[in-house]
Amino acid sequence: MVPLKMTEMWATMGSTIASFMFMWAIIRQYCPYELGRFFENYTQRIMGFFYPYIRISFHEFLGDRIKRSEAYAAVEAYLSANTSKSAKRLKAEIGKDSSNLVLSMDEYERVTDEFQGMKVWWMSSKVVSPSRSMSYYPEQEKRYYKLSFHNKYREVITGSYLEHVMREGKEIRLRNRQRKLYTNSPGYKWPSYKQTMWSHIVFEHPATFETMAMKPEKKREIIEDLLTFSKSKDFYARIGKAWKRGYLLYGPPGTGKSTMIAAMANLLSYDVYDLELTAVKDNTELRKLLIETTSKSIIVIEDIDCSLDLTGQRNKKAEKSADDEMEKQNKEVARKELKDEGGSSSSSKVTLSGLLNFIDGLWSACGGERLIVFTTNYVERLDPALIRRGRMDKHIELSYCSFEGFKVLAKNYLTLETHSMFDTIQLLMEETKITPADVAENLMPKSLLDDAEKCLSSLIEALEEAKEAAAAKKAEEVKDSNTNEEDTFESLDDRDYKTIENRDAIPF
Image (cartoon, rainbow, N blue to C red; front, side):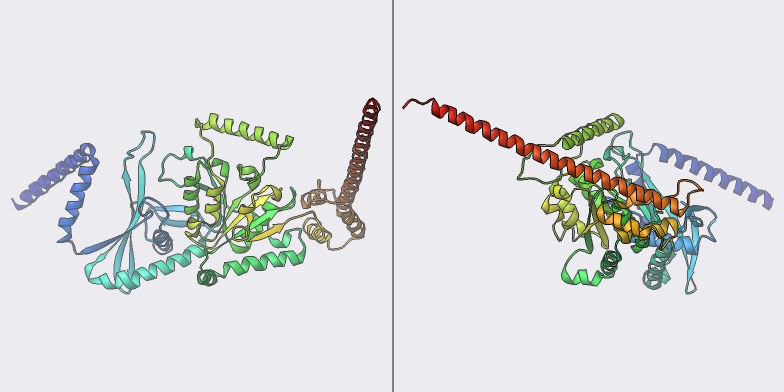
């Protein structure tokens, strides 16, 4: 009779549990979200009187999602290295070298960790709350890690253990850090304000200062400036300035401004944020983008003179040239295409004042160890307030290719350090101007049969053509100048003749 009673008891218990689970599912489905949270909070308070374990949560974002929590990132890195072997459900990401996979615990996974003989439990979780805004916005997810441990270990866990997790997590992040290239998208394309404003890919540009066509002394100057900045945290704190530095790269097209940025990023192991100003709605949005950038990064605005109407001639109203008119028309076409694609009629309302505050205002001090880089082909078009010292601290002119720069390119492309044609090339380079991009194009073999002599001959031919074109242009300018002078003299002669005629017609 006893086994039968036990069977009946287990059957009754199973039925009761099933009924409870069914009722709980019905309540969760039809109960309002706020009421469910109310019951959950009070249930946790009641359980707290009898439950001997303490829980600590590490949320990905705190407050109104201003910035990703450093503590959350450190815990994520620590768990990926220390608990991935015990977790049963894992997620994989590409590691630093773009070949190895980095494994970490998946959502709702629970793992165990030990510290000085004490056992703790980590759990990856998230809270999904329904959006209260427009219906086409998705639900908002708030991810967090939850640490559980017995109450008797409270002092050790909240002290030594958490310090150990933060310290080791930050070291792991530095070792496994994979640099990224970020870009921003138009604001109306973000489905939720809880999503990041930046999208990214792996930064794999191979440029270095060793491969750049520049004079050696100029390279050393830039490298020393960058390395000094990266080691000057205490210095910037002492003088009361935000730990950032502005660089203005200017020069003709094809002189290596974008390559310089990649070399800077590779030298310092910084991320790159390529900011497209025309996709930024207003100054407030620009500030949010700045807040989401991380330390050890380069914020880049290329062709700043073409991005927005920020050229600054605030006290001048000169006539617009044909090129400016064409540029304006191109911008209008681009805006119309943007409007057709996204269904938004709003254009960027970023102002010069907003950009200046972005560079060195109060918000620029959030975070540290950042470079802000502007590039332009026409530095004279920029407002002096935008490029003054303190905003763009270092101005770097990237000009036409010198003979020293040519030798660097010859070594890169043809593995040559000397050749009988070098003397001819040096003489031609002293007489004409050619960009590093044009030199590199002529030195690049176009087929497997192209040898060094053929590539060098191609470069000499290009230099001679550039020399002839420059001479023809100069002759045309002299001719036009002489013609204008003759027209001026003829105009003066006619005026004098008419003056004499009028004087003779006056009766005495």
